[in-house]
Length: 94
Image (tube, rainbow, N blue to C red):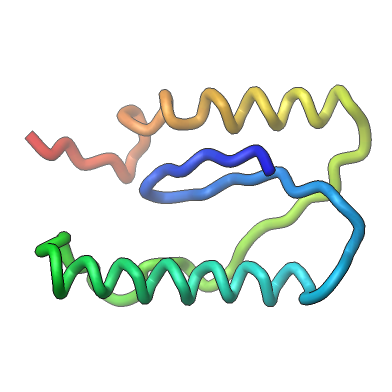
C-alpha cells in the first residue's frame, strides 16, 4: 500500500479484494501491535512515554472511485509529512 507516517496520522491506500479479517480488525491489530512495540521501546530504550492512549479510537476509511481521486490522495499522502511542522499538534523538540 501507499503509506506515510506522521506522529498524528498514518494515511494509507490499500487495494485488493476482501480476504480474511474485516478492515476494522486489521486496523485494531495494527494499533495493538504498534502500541505494544512502543511500550517495549519506552521500557527498554527510554523512548518518551505517552499519556493515555497512543492511538485515537476511530479511523476513517474512504472508497476511491476513480484514477483522478486516487492521484489526488496519493499526492496528499506524499506531501503530508512536509506539512507536519505547520500542524497545530507539532511541538518543536529544540
